[in-house]
Image: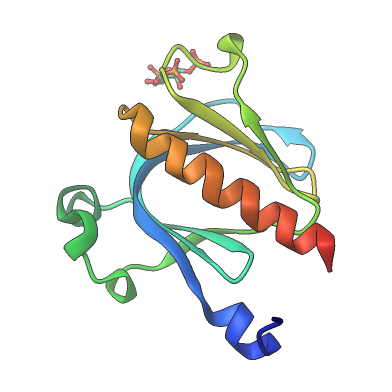
Length: 132
Ligand code: I3S
């Protein structure tokens, strides 16, 4: 049973604190990685990374996301997600997200269980959009 479009786009799929860094901006490889722990929201086929803040890193699920400003917004339509190859980072549990506009992000969490739920949720978000 299909849900109405407005309902579909407003469903909060997942939220939490992740480590992330942007590595490519619209095809241009960035010279330095800047990892930050930040509030991340997956909603309506869009992944939003909020600005880094000590509060967002420490606050976990209790951090009200409206208090921080979005830093990167990634449209999952046409995006692809995979486990990052070892040469992209020495960290464990790293996902690589490539957006349709040619930007790339690394997403990481020390907990394999937590990163796996994000892998699944983002992967499903991409799948749902490709089915439209
Ligand atoms: O790909 P790189 O250059 O090894 O990435 C590391 C750097 O971004 C590093 O910053 P400094 O150059 O300021 O030290 C970060 O601290 C590291 O975390 C980066 O490597 P990992 O393997 O953690 O992604």
